[in-house]
Length: 278
Image (cartoon, rainbow, N blue to C red; front, side):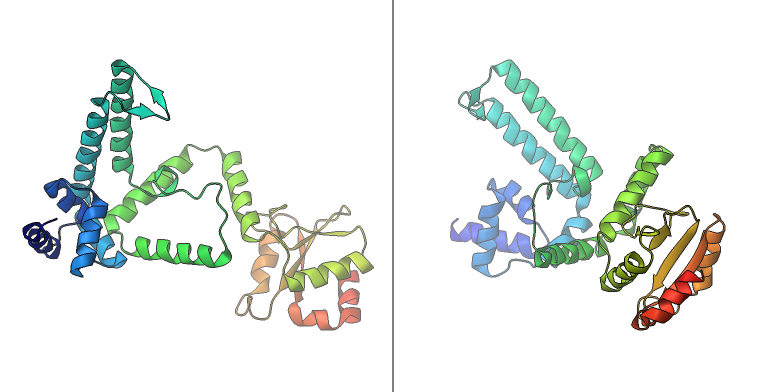
């Protein structure tokens, strides 16, 4: 890019134009424009770019759609253009081009997040550190969404859930809970070992979501014919909780509930006596 083009680019960029919009005006790709802004030292941060994107959402969608259409039409008119090494006839190219344009328009209509978005992590495995960075980025992006966009997404999810049967909703709910608590924690493991040693064949750990009572997951359930559950309450995580609420909830479904506090694990003989008298 010559000096005059760089000066025009700088003026447009500082006036709020995105790299895509400038690329449309200059007839260049986004990467070239981004490199020019970096060279001039005026490139925006991710947060600034996101704010600009949502403030000009409809306009940005329109520009992207037109850009894709032009790219697809250019490829259709190119006799050497191929898809994965295959050469297609002009009629086939027209069908593919039309389908691509419709697909792009649909993506613009529903947005670029979730299962219909461009960036999917299906089949990819990330480290815990990477997952935390992704979660932080998503949280930042959602916080920048305008209220009307949040409402639109919430309505989309609501409409989708209405189409599911009650059994499918429960299945998804159990799957979500199972993912959230895939294995027992340290204190639950200690209590499980105590139960298996002193009450073999009577209690089973179901905190993974194997067993639901009123959409709540008990920690341990009796598998010897009695409608009994044991709830392990942590000193830190359950501070301020009223155990009676959980007892009454499970009681509505005919289950008796024994509350075991974390500190009781230090006195095993007394705990065993408590469970025997339950």
